[in-house]
Length: 428
Image (cartoon, rainbow, N blue to C red; front, side):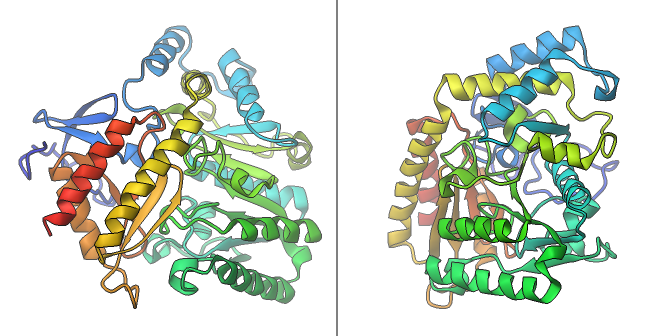
């Protein structure tokens, strides 16, 4: 069990205070599915660096791949030519996606993949407008920030942002439609169609969506909504961009979040867990679409670093070799059942939602009004950390506690995490 409020804090005098931090602990190392602070306290890590360390810490296959590649070549700007791990990772990544998604632009982060997707969409389509959804988090660089509305603070004072950006309501069934997915889908589609009628759909380059809102509150889009969105884009020649930075790589119990709806986006953005902690992102589309973007239209000095790509190959080998997408689905069902049991007897929990190992617990002041209780959300993760379990909050009010266990989490670890969570709630 962690020691409450005793962990030494590293000297932060030379770090910018702009970075918000969930905890004031100082971390020493990670091993398996646990993080250790400098006092030696161990924490079951169900935060995973916000869905990044999907195989835990110090995974032997990833560590071996990193060491082997570091001894061979640390860096090559990909404009100079080709290296084997970079080309092989792009091939392996494309193999996880349906046709015609067969060409990857490699970047350093999720925000960079969104930037690339916006640039590709506008230049390849010769259309200016981009449509995105309320509550989305797509990144903090200017293009990505222009379609990020999960917190008012992110855009505040940073304008002017990109022009011709249009934000429409996300199909939030719980808070807007009494839990009715069909009504949420119909309402969101109606508003979207009204926008398109106003601005002319022939001006819209792309619609960007998270299959499940991440930072915005762990809200899965109804599957019928995603299907209708795909059909709408097809009718008007609009590119559908699926932001899979958090939902991708097995997180929702499928390799990709869009697979639950049986659709194929035009562009898929991936990052976070694809290299288990090394900076790597990928924007995948058809080769034909990339060719319409044009040679030299985009680039990156560090994107597709060979060490990160070697790690990413080890991640794919492990996911596929150990059946971790299926494990994420099974352990997600186990976790969901446990959280539903807690919600049935604790009226502070208004909703449990999500897919696979991307689940959110929505704390409310009153189940009837569904007013969010952010103070409780923040207090719960603080108490859980003191008890040795790392969880994070999300949503504008911080009232949703998000669960992001590693893909190779065990049944015993799920039970351990649920036990700590239950004891914290019982303690009031």
